[in-house]
Image 1 (cartoon, rainbow, N blue to C red):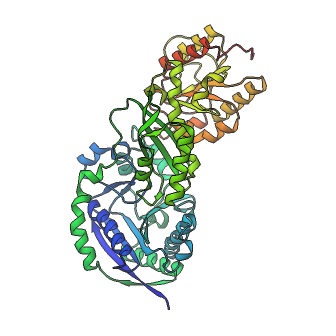
Image 2: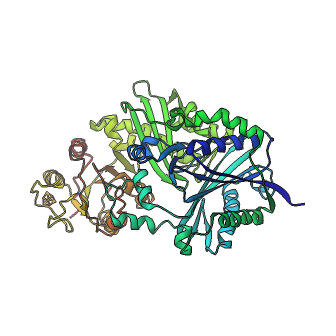
Length: 534
Ligand code: SF4
C-alpha cells in the first residue's frame, strides 16, 4: 500500500518562526510523534538566512538589512547564506531514515540528495520548466540555478530542504548578502542573472502559488512513491514551537557563530572544495605548540550538524603536530560516523596542517597575523627554507589603469603604483620578474621558466584567485609562495571572468612592504634568485 505522508503548508511566517518550525517539526518527527512530512513555507518580511556554520558578520550586510526591514536568521542546516523573499517558495521533506523511497539511501548523501531533488525536478517539469538535478545539490534549468538545497539529521530522522525561486530580486540579494560587490553596476546584476533563474524568467509569467505547490507535491509523490494528505501542525509541534520560538528570535541564536575579534595568535587556512568553502581558524599557543581553540566555518554541509562543534572540541588543547592532528581528525570521523558532503577528512587534515604551519613563516620575520596573507603551493610553510624561488610574478591588475605597461611587460618604476618598488627590488637583486596578464599567460610563464630550470617563484594574487585555481597551481608541479593582495579584487567585484581574459578594469594594491620584507629575507638566506633564466 502507498505510504501516506503529511502535506503541511505553514504559509507566510517570519524568519524566526520558520526556523523554529524547522527545528520543532524535525524534533517531533524524530520522537515518532508526527508523520513523514512535506512542508511548504514562505517568508515575510524578506529574510537573509545564513547557514548553520556561518557567521552573520562575515556573510550579511547587517546595516543595510536593519535599515530596510530585512530580517536576519540562522538555519539549522549547513550551506551558504540565502535571501528568502516573499516570492520564494521553500519546500522541506521531514522523514524517518527508513521511510519509503529513502531507506535504501540513508548512508549515501549524494544519492539521497539526488532522490529528493528529483522530486522537486519532477514538480518543476509539471509546470513546463526543463529542470534538472545538478550534483552535488542544486536544481538547474539550462545551467542556471533555480533551487539550492541542503539538509540535516537528528536521531532517526532527517530534514532536506530547498528554495524555489518563483520571482527573483537580484538587486536586493546583492545588497543584503556580502557577495563582495562594491557598487551595484548593471554588469554585476547581469552576471548574477547568467547563473540564476526563476519560474517567472523561465515561463514568462508567475503561475498561481497553489499550482506551484500542487506540482511540486505531485513531483515528490511520484519520485518517493508516497501519497500526501493535507494536515496542520500537531499539538506537540504547537507546544514545542511556543517554547522554542524565543530562542530562534534571540541574538544568541542568530549571532551564535562569530569569529573572535582578536586575531592575535590566530592562523587561518581556506580552501574551496567540491563540498564548499572551508575556512579553518586556529588560536595557537606558539611556545607550547598546541591549539588553544579552533573555529571551522564555511558553506559546507556536515551530518550530523553538531559535528563541527564536536570536532572543534576535539581540537582544543591538541598538540599542534602532524601526527596528533591527523589522528584526532581521523578518529573523530571514524568514531562518530560524521560526514561532510563533498569533503574528505584528509582535506580537513591538510587545511589544519596548513594553518598550524603558518607559524613557520616567523623565520622570514613575518608575524602570525601577516602569515595569514601567505599561501603556499606544492610545499608546506615549514619547508620554506628548503625551497628555492627563482623569479617573481606580479598581477597586471596592480598596475595603474592608464599605465602604458598595464597590458605589457615592464615598468619604468615611476612610483605611481605599488608595482614599481617590486620591479626596483627585483632589479637590485637580479631576480627575473614578469607581469601576468591572464590565467593562460600565468600557466605559459610557469611552463617557460620551468623549461629553463627554475625551481619555484614568489608571486602575488588574491585569495579568490588562489582558491579558484588551487588545483591548477598544484598541477604545474612548481613550488610557489603567494602573497595576498591588499584590497578589492576582481573576485570581490564579481569580475573574475574579465580578469581571466585580462580585461579587469579596476586597480589593486600589492602588500608591498610585506612582499619586500619576505623577498629580502629569502635573499639573505640564499633562497631567491641567483639562476640565470634569461
Ligand atoms: S610604477 Fe610601473 S607599473 Fe606602476 S604606473 Fe609606474 S610604470 Fe606603470
